Length: 202
Length: 202
Image 1 (cartoon, one colour):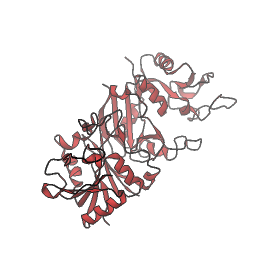
Image 2 (cartoon, each protein chain N blue to C red):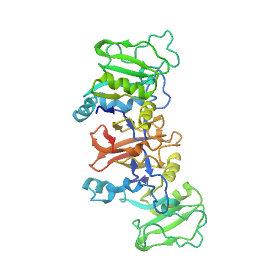
Image 3 (spheres, each protein chain N blue to C red):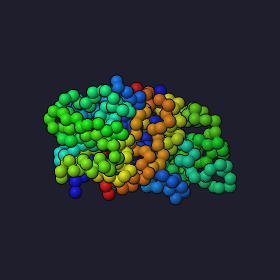
């Protein structure tokens, strides 16, 4: 059975997946980018391996609208095409959860952004169909992952714990209504830069 | 300068320092004891070293009343002498924060429980005096550590992250009013059983 997988969803030691005061200047919140340093700056071989595993066997991606862009409400005339320039790193269909549907946006390299307003289960169904037997990756943000966790729909999570304290921001592990009872930590692997926690359904 | 240190203050991956529904049967909350497995069951050499470092150079301990025992309100006739039987593992003065002062309780092995009702700073002053130049260890629970963090009074924290998900319980990292801005992660060391995060003042 194809799975719904969360990868590289970095958390601070104090439990935040984005810093406080998210804005166009700080899409990850203040100091939020420190959560992801391990994946970019001179990434260690172990960390590179874990990071790259997130792309293996994935045929489609789902993300919340805030992951796609800063536009709120109606899309309007704004010609927003995502944070990733013309050749986004997905190279497959990406389903963006929104209340404001618009036409699909084809990008270079095989990425096409589709906009879905019929709820998380409908988006998942469309994504599995598009993935054609491969897995679906759930991109975030935290509120989107939380919705899928509450529905018991996530099969696997990779949570890197970055050695930073953000002091505030957005949590994943709250308001989950007991959903985590269905999950367990299956492996923890650390590099000097980050601790990779792997979580799966019991 | 002598320091106020927190050691072995174990956290779950989802950020809880005790499980839900704390009671006399479950003083650490449901499944809360899983946070501490690493320190007891066949403890690995690295983990033993980190654990034992918590006792080095410590001349006194401070703890919240809930750490001392389950009695709430007036002490009454109950002859409660702590969770640790007649020879507690402290072997030095222990200052218990309470609103209900009682006479000190001397135990075997050098431990004496003192009861302080003049607030956290007064308790710290008494503990530093009793430690006579050595450090003071802050034993918990979470609400007690949070109070000292808010006051900027903690110099060092050792937070072991246990590979468990508790799904609910008591957090440390909340309602800290920006206090963590004064702290940084200085080292992370992992064993197969647990990830040790070391935090100090910037």
